[in-house]
Length: 407
Figure (cartoon, rainbow, N blue to C red):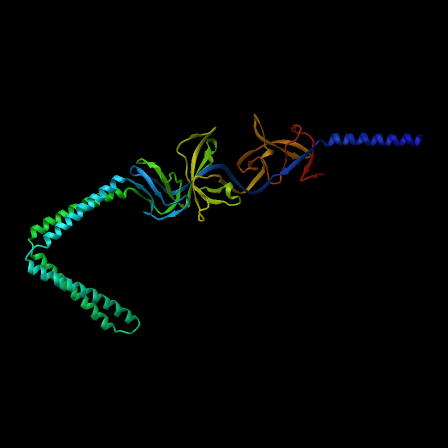
């Protein structure tokens, strides 16, 4: 019995000693170490893509859209016809103008054919013969050219054939001059003026008709095609857009309180959910000039430029963006959750001789998880992480660092 009582007494003493030890050692608290590293401060946001250079294509006249020869995403060259707007009334005007031109030309030919019949007949006969001769000499010249290439004819023979063509052309020109001299110059001039007037009228109506040919204003890619063949258009109606996709402008929506962190030239990374794993790099080009509502947000539109060599990123898409607002080399950093605040300011609990002591700190830039400490701590200081129960300055604790208890 005495031995059993002694054993129970020893156990009780051990339990009491353990309780006293635990009470004196304080609660277990996880700590992190202030350390120096390169800290990058970034600002996540979102935005919308648009081409760096683009133009809208609008109808210049009313009419029915007869045809659309392009589709969204199709590359086009400048002045390439992409659609046709028809107007039946213009076609009848063109036919009328062509008829008046044909009449003027016939009248001109009649005046030009005036003069002494016998002499005119002789000239016409000579011109007919000269035309036949010119056709034959051109055939001979072409044949000798091919033979020369096969070294079956000499260069001298080719040049001689060419000279014969020139002689025949000169003969025909002389005959034409003789025929014109048979008619009074004033009559010919008047007939020619009527032809010129008819030509001008036809040109004007054709120019009006050409407005129905919708052309690409620049070389690029078609996007935002808004119409289909058969639709009726009024002047100014939107047909499509054409833009260049090798460089893009991204309109980023930055919340008003964060705008002070953004500056021109800062690096920007763009990501698009539709192409996971890809990113596009660029920089801030222009800061906003005003604040505007966006849903429940008040934002400024920050414009950035990015390269898009593969034309994978499309205009009009909604993208995620990260602006790198600052980078500090050799910054003393802590996790953001170690910071505590009260009316006296920002502070941390630093480990000192197994107790925690309040330490006022000043902060600099921050990343998503880390913050720069500019004053109040030194490299290697141990700082308490958040605990279930509030800590008090001077409280004794059992410190744990990286899962290991510190002795």
